[in-house]
Image (cartoon, rainbow, N blue to C red):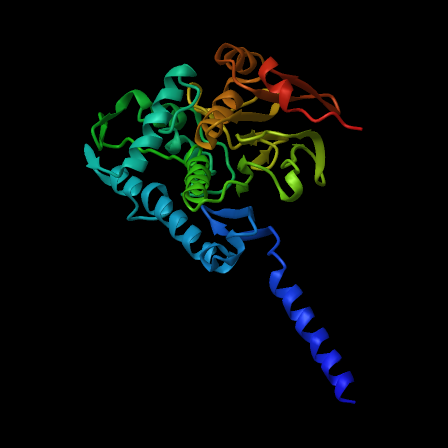
Length: 343
């Protein structure tokens, strides 16, 4: 009886020894929430050593990510009356702002110049006029005189930067960074993850993404270009490596009046919604902010001019253009390397 008990205790000790020597396994974790009027989701991999760091686990990391995103909103949201951007829009001439806001406005002005004015962050009054902005109005078509009158207050040529000061040449100039700030938010979270020593992640804010490293078992992050239409149809699968990707499209946010479809994307030159058949633009870049802004610029330019613009920049860009009941694909040579061959 005593001998049996000794054997039993020996087995218990052996089991404890084995379990205590077992190494922690790498873990795939996910953090998600709401920001900038949409969702965000951060998927990331912790190494076996990192799993013992409680600060890197989902609940703790979410609090820190939320703080980062709140800061971006406090800087660049047009929906928050006391954000830096809102205070600048209320000012008559200038306002001192953060390095982050200067960075985004500076890039917006650069893309404005590159695109010949197709990307214009001062187009907000026209967006509002058509009922797609913070000042939402009934779905109706503005008259031509009102459109021309509103256009007089629009133009990034009236916006400049000196140090950390944003300056407007027209007192009523209104800046809306919604076409580029979401991408900046993705970059900010990606840089935050890397500062925490997390190098395998996928950051997604409302469909603007940035990837780094791999999933578990060294599997690449696989992304999809959506085919416009009903349901979640996939047009193409992608492996983007350590890059960012942004998609702009007019197939979700629009209204119809008298049988005509009006897109939420406004052409600054005409003051009216775009009316070409380019329905989706996907851009890959090192920066989600850059990809976000370029996707909007190319959407405004349209299928022909947009592709020529992307080709000139040697930018990886994929376009979907409506033709009859289907779509035509076109892309720059730089984009082809990211396409996944379907089996």
